[in-house]
Structures are given as structure tokens and as C-alpha cells.
Length: 96
Image 1 (cartoon, rainbow, N blue to C red):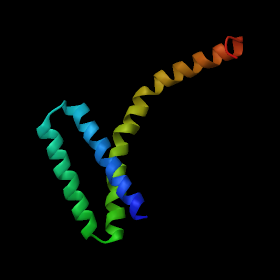
Image 2 (cartoon, one colour; image 1 turned 120 degrees about the horizontal axis):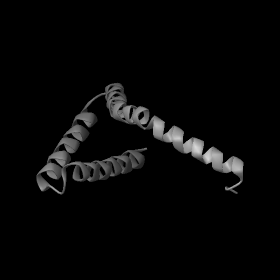
Image 3 (cartoon, rainbow, N blue to C red; image 1 turned 180 degrees about the vertical axis):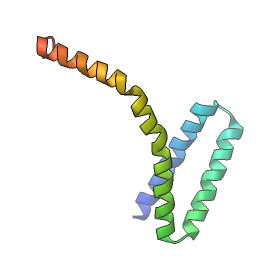
Image 4 (cartoon, helix red, strand yellow; image 1 turned 135 degrees about the horizontal axis):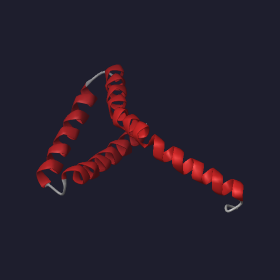
């Protein structure tokens, strides 16, 4: 379990750093600020009870899902159009 938690922290740190660099550009200040905030949350999480950490994690994942859900609704017409195009190609025999 400890190895899973450690590898998860490493991967989240890497993905978060890549996301910050994508959103804000290759700014060392932004990258180092993200690392500082990330490490602060690691220390805070290690000192909290397990229930509080799980609740905080659930809340943050919910907050992160909101932009994704909005994006899904905004892209719904595009997905619908592409799905209709796929089914038309499938019914006509252009697809194997």
C-alpha cells in the first residue's frame, strides 16, 4: 500500500507539473510554486486523519470534474454529428 501511495504521489506531481507548464507556459516560477503547493498538501495530508483526507480528496476530484462535465455538454453536438456520420458509413457498408 505504501508503494502504491508513493507512486501515486509521484505520478500526480508529474501530471500536475505538466499541466501547469501547458497552461502557464514554461515558467519556472509557476512550476516551482506548484511544487511547493503540492508538497504542502502532502505534508498536510500526512498529518490529517484518513477520513478527512478521503473527504478532501473526494471534494477536489468533484471540483475537477465540473469543467469536464461542462466540456462534455459543449461538445455534445459535435459528438452527435460524428456518431451519425459513423452510423451512416456503417450502414452503407463503407466500414468493415
